[in-house]
Image 1 (cartoon, helix red, strand yellow):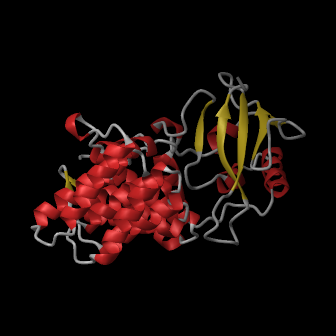
Image 2: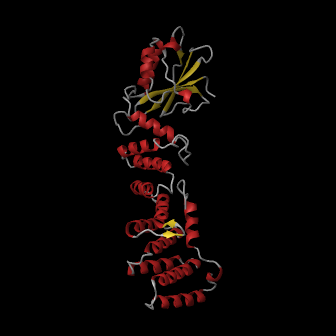
Length: 351
């Protein structure tokens, strides 16, 4: 199985069904009586003690498939776990435990399924099932069902290190960085964001649930490497400083207050990632000979994390500029986290 990205949970389940289903043709079981008789025959053969490894595998597989065909997940779990416990040296134990994990998934017991998927990784050698690595299948399932960041970090790292040819490592670096961030492991998060940004397709990759993956990672890394000396402790302090500089036509102070990382100047329809939206410029040329004014209060669209100050008089083409203020989200540095920055300019009246 080649996978360029993580498999959604439903696809994982379908994969499991594809791997384990054997309800075809002569293998189908029609009545409970037939099932019992068939299972007893196979059990007697299994206990005969005269089987080769291959014959023993075939019988166990048939018995498990019979239970699976009847959707007797409880019976399947008891049969396979008992076999594994009594035969710890069976080379196919990873397969039997994989079927066990699938049975628990089928009954909605995801935490127990997670235990068995992880047990396979920790205790059993890898096997190929129809050309697919059992360990890879386990990791894909674990990524989908695990709720603990530290566990997901372990699984993402193992996928990247062991199966780079089976996954999109660019996506996994991003998701791993997010898990480190969720787990407050900031040094590892920054390192992994850098690894994501270094991938050749980082700027173009589309990652489900993360539409601004490259922009957010780039902003975080650049912000971390900057002086951060343009931030203000509060929105009122930033607002008053900017208004004072405008009143005094103090372009030097305005240049100082502008964010030094990802400051943008664009229309309301533009994307912040557009190449021409982040061109560096000085306020000097825009203030000289102009009569700049500003609203007494912040725009009504402002909220606890973002604020807009309407100004006008900048030029004859686009007179109105909305100065965009943003709360800094940077938990890595408590002295900076929660401060405010002047992050950009929206040109023209709001749409």
